[in-house]
Image (tube, rainbow, N blue to C red; front, side, top):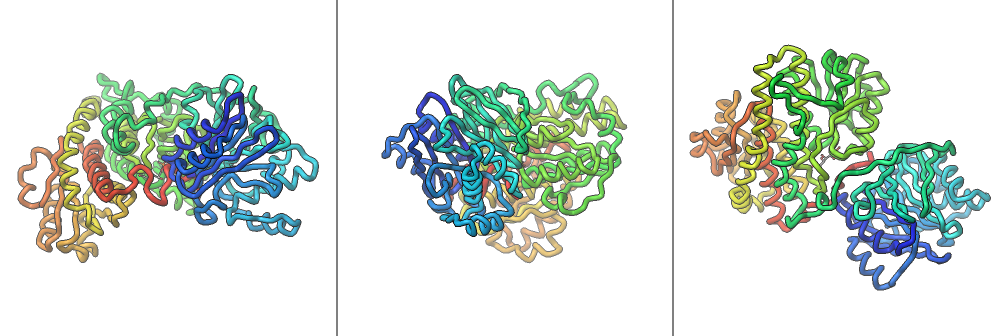
Length: 610
Ligand code: AGP
C-alpha cells in the first residue's frame, strides 16, 4: 500500500521525509516522491522505482525546507512511472497533494474539471484531488476549507496530505479508509500512514479516524470533520522501539520474524494463562463474554494468511465449544448479503488492522447487529478501534510482506479464545489444564522447529527450480497446506496450491509426475493413516515427496524423499508448529531464486484498497 509521510517544523524536512519513506518501503511500492515548500518556492522530486533513487536525486539538488510531504506509490490507476508518481501538483505548481486510496468517482470529477479548463498530466485518480482543491481555492476559500469542500465531492477512500505555497505554515491531512497518524514533536509535527515512519522522531501519536481532517502547524494541530466540526483527540504514547522495526543483523525482515517466533508466540499468551483454572484471561473481551459464549454462530472473516488462521480457528472452536463456526473471505462476506443476527459473533482477523475488505466486513456485521470482535496485531489500527472488543496478538511489528509470526500468534490467540469459551461451556478444568500446559511448552517447541533451518535450506536447493507445488493435509493440517502454498507463491512466484489431501483423487492427482513436488503435512494425528495412503498414491505416480512429520515417526522416511521432523503438541496447537518449516521452505527457495523476499512484486503489506 502507498506510504505517506509529512513534516512541518524547525528542521530541514528533506532527510526526515526520505528516512520516513525508507521506513515505509516494506509496505510495497513502485515509485516515490517528495514535495517541499521553501520561502514561497515549491519543488517536487519524484521517480519510478526505489526511494534510494529519489534520495540520490534529492541529494544532488541539495534541497532544504521546513515543510514537505513524501509518498511511496503502489499503483492502482496508471502505470508506475514518474508522471503518475506522487506528489501531484496544480498547474501553477503552488499546491501539492499525496494520496493513498481510490477515488471511485474520479472520471466524473476529471471530466467536470477538464470542462472548466483544467489540464491533467497523469493517468491517476489521485490527480483530480489537487485540481479540485485548486478549484475551491480559486473560489476564494482558504486551504482547509478548500480541502473540506473537495473531499465532500469525493466517493471512495483516501489518506491525503496537502501543502500550499500561499499558506506555508500548515500541512493538511485527511483520512477516509486509509490510515493516517499525526506525530507530535517539539516545534515540529508529522503525519504518516503508519507509525514506523515516525519512530525516530516521536512516540506521541494521534490516530485520525475516517471523516477527520487535521490542520497541522509546527506548534500544534487541530482535528475537524470535513463538515468543519472540531474534535478533541487523545494523544497515545506508542511502545514500539526502533530495533523492533530494524533487521537486527538478519538478511531479511522475513527471516528475522520467522526466528522471532519463540518470543512472539510467548508474547501472545504472556499473562493470559490461568494454570490452576485451566483457562485463559483475555481482558479485551471480558465485557462481552456472555454474548460470545452464547453465540448462535461464530463467523471468522479475514483475508489471505489471516483467513487461513480463521480456518484453523474454525476447527478449534467447533471441536471444543460446539458453537457452529464458519469462515468467510472478507471480500466475499461484505457483498454476499450475509444472514447475520444479533445472536451471532463475527470475529475479524487482521495483522495490519487496516485491510479494506476486512474493515468493510466488520462494518457490515456491525450494521446487522452482530457482536463484532477484532484479532489484530497493530495497536490502534482501524479494525481494532472499530471492533466492539477484541484481542491483540502482540506479535510485534511485522515488516515482511509475507506474514509469518503474525500467523502463529493469531493461532495462539484463537486457541486462547477457544479455551476461554470452552471452559465456560463443557470443557473440564483438567482438560483445560492440558491445553494451558501445551501452550506454556509451545515457545520451546517453536525453537526446536527453527533449529531445522539449515536442513530446510538444503531441501530448498532441490526444489528452487520447480514450477509448481502441491501442498496437502487433512483436518487441522488442511489450512496449513493452504498457508504453505501461499507463502511459497507470494515470495518465490512459483505456482502452488493447497488442497485437502483426500481431495487429491478428485482431480489434482492428474498433476502428479516426477516434476511435481508434493508437500504433505503429516503429523501423527487422527488422520495420519489416511494421509499415508495419499502419500503412497503420490509415490506410485512418481511425485517428489516432502513430509512435515512428527519427530517420533520412523515409518514415514521410507515413503518420502524428504521428511522434516518436528516436536509434537496437542492437536489444536499443531498448526503453529507445522507451519514453521513451510515458512522456512518458502523463504529459502525465494532467496535462492534471488527474489526480493521482503517486498515481493505486486504485493503490499497492508491492502487498504478494495
Ligand atoms: C500474507 O502473507 C499476505 N501478506 C496477505 O495474504 C495478508 O495475510 C492479507 O493481505 C491480510 O492482511 P491482514 O492480516 O493485515 O488483514
